[in-house]
Length: 88
Image 1 (cartoon, rainbow, N blue to C red):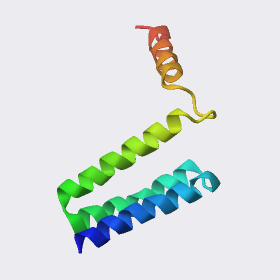
Image 2 (spheres, helix red, strand yellow; image 1 turned 135 degrees about the vertical axis):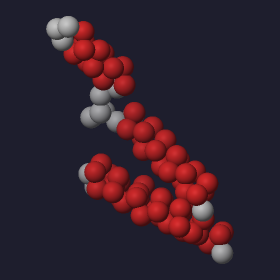
Image 3 (cartoon, rainbow, N blue to C red; image 1 turned 90 degrees about the vertical axis):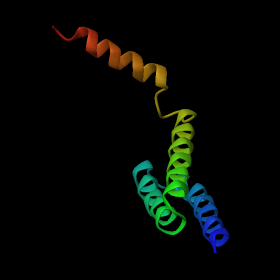
């Protein structure tokens, strides 16, 4: 039974990866939520957290190589410069 649920989760992630280029980032992010919920409900808390962690890492790393997303260094520099310019 558990193997079938894990297989379903892997297939769902593969399908999302296939349609991800045609959807917006917000739409894809919303589609991950039911998969994480199924992992919690059917596989238990530790498996649910594992699926949530893998989802977060996979989506985070997939945006790092995107050309339309600023690099983390640029985001950090912009945030630091905003903080430094604020009057105290």
